[in-house]
Length: 344
Image (tube, rainbow, N blue to C red; front, side, top):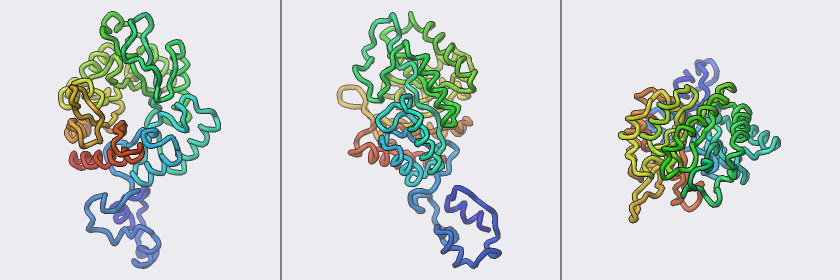
């Protein structure tokens, strides 16, 4: 049957057709362009080369602007080289995604369709600002490399625009944060939680889930802190964007320690990057597979706990020389870890 042979080769679509009723074996091999019947002994996906879909229980993805600002090139790499069917949108053409005009949105939609890519979420900068009335955060940046220079007063517009974009790009998820990290967030935590709760209510009316990312420069940085926030805000459409790299960069052991504390049913997204200690006692970004995070154990635990959503590569590591090459090398490390975990 054609179906069995093509599943081995990893084709996107499978149609069960008796080969003999169509053409001879040699004609099929020539016509198919993948010679899938000739490759039964190749055991690993790497043996087939790049560009074939990666089979995984997770929605394997990458944040688009970690590769390039050229969205067409990004989608070519993601779909044809990495073999992914999903992509996370943050910025393109030197613009934050919130600033795209109608023509640019239409072009992005056209490119996505041409590469058969689906969008995991809108990686919005919602609430990545200072909390009003609190002492200035040392993490509040002088400039934003993600072109997301929106103030506190604009956050309602950021939320509405993010929801609009989620509809246009056919996803039900929008990423958010909980304000630049304070030395002592305790006096403000209740009000911050109310702000998150109100945003979740707005999103819920539109059928959208908010993904609160644990970010080391924001007030929820670790698995332990994320567990506390989720317990305080029981709204079911406020989920966690679990980022073990961010947790590790602030000193937590994300797996198993931080992960053990999380309500597993409220993990709605996962970012994948790695870290390594530096001589001054801090951490630096690393390619997946070359850092200290036990990603094999983390991937295995996610699968065993029923997680079937995005595992999205957020490279950050610059060691490949260019963003594209750095992401390529980090994806190679991530594939090895997924294989070792039994998830690819």
